Length: 342
Image (cartoon, rainbow, N blue to C red; front, side, top):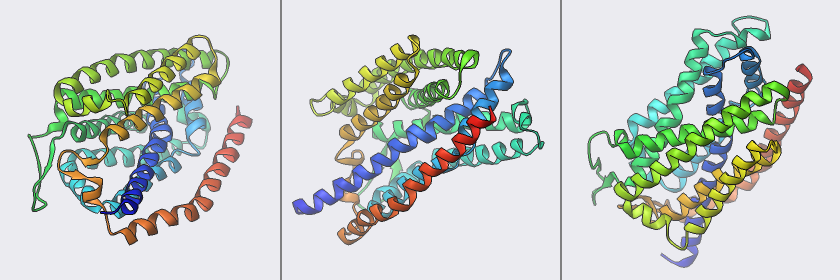
């Protein structure tokens, strides 16, 4: 394979990684919003749920565009790797997708239980489904990440896909990755909601951000320990000179976000939180490269014909011209309506 082809393959991998980052920052915060909706409590329980609905209601479905984007890029540009991941992770992936669908259905059904907006603030069966699905989906996606980085997916020379052990997503390493994904989503949501509220309600979400941030830090330490024990190849790449500086800057951003939350610098906390999530995912991408499915499939092995990859990548700017302004307009218009409704 010549250098030009390798550049196109790496660019396609980078585009997929950017889609994962966007989904983590936007869709992840939506999952976290569902968590806080389920655990709303105290004298301002109704106001907490209404704040979550106003913040995520207009755009929660649009955020899943990024998940579709990642799937399309992988399916089109890396079909062999996409097939291996789909077969090996059939159960967690489909359970996560079921959770995403249940979130959407329950959110809408709860919203239309009554013509009055306050109905969404009441505890209901649909609200419980919405919250539980918001917990299950990020855990399953995080566990699937653990299976990939642990090297549990094997592909032989004939293309036969198998798992190194039964239900590897239930291992302590994978489960801890899932819990870390959940805690990160909850932290992002709490930080975002601090910036969408004020007064005592803002303090409610500030306390939730402190709790979720503490859980994220503890789980990150456990994941690091389990990575060293169960996925040593990945751990050694994380601490390599290529990846470690990115991870360290990400940790600095997390510390900066925590400091901003404690000192009530709300806008700064949002920037730091988004930076931390983005840099940690970038570090994962650098550590994982050149493997799409370790240890048997590299990005080069899984790549589609160059004509297909070029077509997909050259089509992206055209699609972005229509998609990105539409998402921006959706956010601005509905966010303004939410502010006016308060």
